[in-house]
Image (cartoon, rainbow, N blue to C red; front, side, top):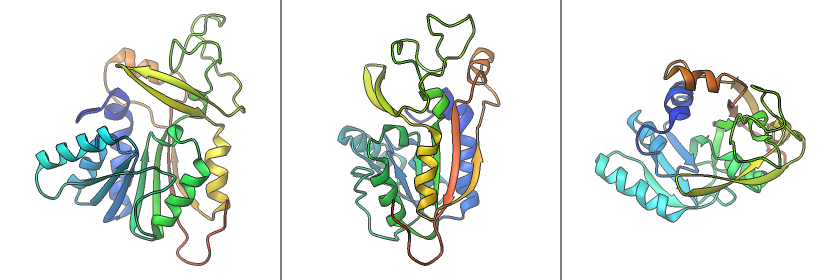
Length: 239
């Protein structure tokens, strides 16, 4: 993603995500699934003490290299998985999951770890693909998100088997990634059962950019942005 990111990050998600980071009042943040550390560096530029964690060693090395180039005060990066975050309990004010929850197989384990490392009153900030967008037809992945299925009427958006959890492989620029489709309830209900409180929800759309891309990303709900708060005290329920 370099420094600017793709169209969705630059024109849809970065602005509201950074607004929520600033509004959180957080000082110490975890960037989960940080990739090469682009959003980690943006948060560090806002004055946060940021740790980025990613399971791909090559991306962590690149994130560290870019952080060193940026000079002192940048983020630090660790190799690790969301299901076993290499940080201490109650150690961060903010966990950012920026387009990574749909890449995690064991979401329940990841949620448990996120809540473990959050301090009481801390926040989880999520940008994720909409479950409508990931419910792509099983027999036609070639057209990607907001696809035109060969059997659909012209201009139709196809959403198929919405309630059936499943994984699939997507690829671009020579990189293949395993994504998971889950109905929206599978993202919300486990956090609610653990006592987390939903404090913000949005379905952001592009505000600027090339007309054809703006129109494309306004066709159907593509992204969700959520903020959850950990209880200030008391026991946290299990899954």
